[in-house]
Length: 186
Image (cartoon, rainbow, N blue to C red; front, side, top):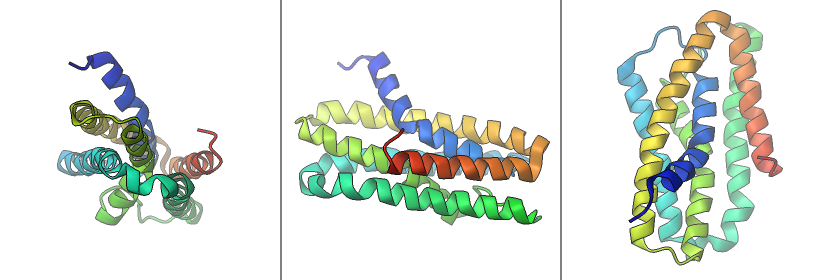
C-alpha cells in the first residue's frame, strides 16, 4: 500500500506548473464560470495524468528522445501562450485572452505536462509496476484538478484588480517558466 504523503508530494511537484500557468493565464477573467473551470481543470488533469501514464507505459521506446525534445516542446508552447498574452497586454486590446478557448486550454495542458511524460519514462526505467503507477497517476489527476481550480480562482481575482498589466506579467511569467525548462533552471 502506497503512503498518502509521498503521493501528494509527488503529485504537487508535477502540477506546480499547472497552477502557475492557469493563474497567469486567467488574470483576464472578470467573472468565474464554474462550468468552464470544471472543464479546464478536467482537461489539465487528464492530460497531466495521461502523459505520466503514457510515459510510464511506453518509456522504453522513448528514452533517447524524451530528454532532448520535451523541454523544447514545453518551451515553444509556453513561449507562444506567454508571448500572445504579452502582445495583447501591450496593445491594450479589449479582447481578453483566457482559458475558455479549447485551443488555449490544450496548449497550456500539454506545455505543463511534458515533465509528467518525462517522469513517467523515468519511472518505467526504474522498473515500476502497475501497482505503483496507478496510485501515482490518480494522485496526479486529482491534485492537478485542485491546483488548476485554485490557479484560475487566484488569477482571475488579480486580473479583476490589475487588468492588462496583470496579463502582461502573466505572459512574462509563462515565458520565464519556459526558459527555466529550456535551460533546466527549474
